[in-house]
Image 1 (cartoon, rainbow, N blue to C red):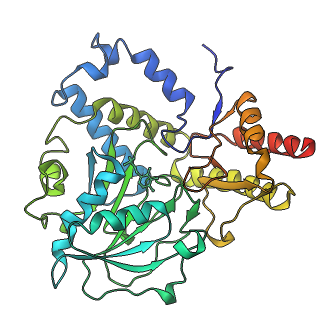
Image 2: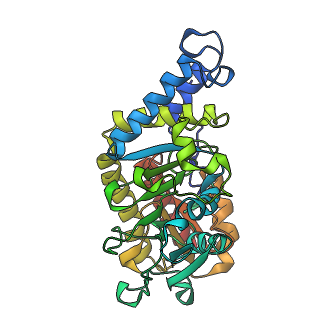
Length: 365
Ligand SMILES: *Cc1c(COP(=O)(O)O)cnc(C)c1O
């Protein structure tokens, strides 16, 4: 089998996966580890699947440097599910009734802020909505509460292409980070946040599994109404198997972890992602046709948004890029324009091909 006909897929999620991983999965599909059946067809509680699950947990711990004081949960319901699960599990820790702080820097953190209002007081610390979510409000304008259980922020706004380059400094307050689209793309000091969560389908594997990394002392404080499948303490006690877990998504994520380890881990990914995003931003900045509108201090390394200054060329740009094998460059409908999602599985050659195409398109425009 060859990969000659694989496209460069810039989709935001579900997103491109490493071809080597897909090939391995296809080779193992009918006969996984000599069992004579696929990994999808065995019990999640049997020794074979449990071994795979433990390996995936171990590899993720190594890749992200997750200390034992943090649990790793593999849940369902996506990042959107955690928008409800986080307040239900953590808000009771607030001193004067359920409450949490929210930093709103894009569509995703805004969704988290709105969902949390069902469970307690959601306090808006700062928002960049008036700047069309193109920046992060300066920290000296933030109105932090003294009685909130935690501060929620989105480390990488997938739609706007805005990324925190550092974990915000909020003293000893508990931080909750939505890292759905930049998990494993750069080094992160896990101890700087109380909770990190991410769905797999952006930068890891297929949709269906959501990784939640929780400091152990933050578990066990959930509201009585918390559904058992999103009760972190209950899930930890049952090894994320309070109900049937998404076994195939966990298996494929595990293969991606091995692929990452073989390629030098997160430090090496960070190096390549910096190279890829710098190449693209530098090209956009010097071009006469394209523009990126994000505050250069906060440009995302994984989701590069850009606009054609002549928007009447949008349809031609999308049609021609797609026929050139550069797929899914249309921006999110809430943002317009274009977006190139260049996660770990997008090789440098894909970004080089995109820049070449953009240069040629501009020349002809
Ligand atoms: C995609 C995304 C989500 C939502 O993930 P689902 O798996 O669809 O629930 C949440 N936050 C961010 C930053 C995302 O990119």
